[in-house]
Every structure is written in structure tokens, then in C-alpha cells.
Image (cartoon, rainbow, N blue to C red):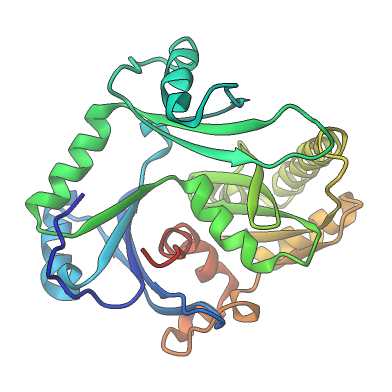
Length: 308
């Protein structure tokens, strides 16, 4: 944690998210009773290394003035769903650490562990999402930001960033499925009453769609629809008390075409996710593009944190 005694930060959060060979910045303010306001959404190519890129952004974008959050990369952590340990709250993390030692491919002693509850009903066994990351990974990220004097106040993961966006679109007492297809990533989330109930990676991303010819793209989308339908059916059997109302799609490539293809193959209503319906971004007009929204989705989600 960056020592921030006496420091007056700008309102909201600034996310600093590495995505392949670029860094995305998003500054979001969440005021009580108001729609989130996206004040900054920018992307910068990494030319000579991440360290140099951060140095330049500290100077050009004044990162020292913000509470900053980052996301771990896909290979920097493991997220698993397990039964909630039947132990007192103060013993919970230790019980999970013991259980996770045979589920991850790195030592869990000293590893960073975070837990998100999965609410249940009807006497079902309670479950949790356990996120575990090697201490070396967390230490390296913290050391880099400390070196650049960037106030790093939160470290999160892509699944929770997508969750933060998805819950903005929820209808009262209805579940929501949200599919994010970005460069190198495909993530399906199902949320309900602000909580994440399912998150799974999809082996299809926006690059695969962009690089395929028309016939191949149709085959990819048909396979995607089949995977989604199987996941939704399984979710319905597992969480019968949740009625999923619709599937929203954010895609960096041809979002409208992706939605149209899925509409033909899914029983669930499918729509493009449009941040303009749930957030304000008058100062960032490029976000009127569905593809640009998807491009910055993880950064925006990482900045959609509650006030500290």
C-alpha cells in the first residue's frame, strides 16, 4: 500500500492497465446517487518497455494525483470456486490456503489470497471465489509502481473488472450475462444483485474474429453460441433461483455483427452493451463507439471501484 497520509487525491479512481503491448488509462468517478462519470479513457503503446512507459505517463498524465488501481495479467494468478470453509471468519484465509495448495502450480505459503462470497439460497452449500497470486508477482507490481511514485491503492483481476461493468446493466431481481471479447481475452460473466456468480474464460477473442474470413467467422460464432448455451443451461441447473434476463456483448471487432449472429443461435435476448445507457462520458466522445468501449472495458471496470 502506498503511504498517502496528507495526500489529497483527485476524486474517484484511475486504473493503469497493461493489455498486451499497450497501457490503458481510465479515470472514473462514482458519486452517490449519480451515474458513473468516465473522465479519462486513453491508450498508449509501450515502445521501449513498461517501466519507461509508466515514467512518461507519470509526467504527461499526472498519475501521482490519483488513487490508482491495476489488474493482474491472466497468467499472474488463479481464480477457483470452492466450498466456503466451515470455520470462524478469522481462520478463513488459512483454511483456504491449505485447500488451495493442491489446486495451483505455485507455493501458496506467503501467496496473496482474496475471497469473494457467492450468495446462495435454499440451504445450498455456500461457495466462494478464491483468488491467489504468488507473492513475487504482487511484490514486483508494487515495487514498479513505488519506483515510479504512482500511488497504487488496489490490485484486482479482469474477472472483477468485467463484473464492475456488468452490474451497471442489471435489471432488478434478474441475472445478467455479460460477454467481453477483447484482444487476447474472452470472458463470460453472470451477475445477480451486484454479485458475481459465474466467470469463465472463452477461447475466442476479438482477434480471432477479425482475422477470420466470412465462412470461418460464421463457424467461430456458431461454436461460441454453443458454448454460451451450454454454460447458461448449466448455470440454470446450478442456480435455479436466478432468472438470467439477457446477454450483453462487448466486442472490439464488429460488435453489431457478433450480436446479430448470437441472436440467431441463442434463446436468450442478446444486445450490445452500451455504456451510454448507464454512465456519462461527455468529455470522452470516442466512447460512443461500441468497439472503443470494448477496447477500454477492463480499464473502465478496474476504475469502477467504490470510494475508499
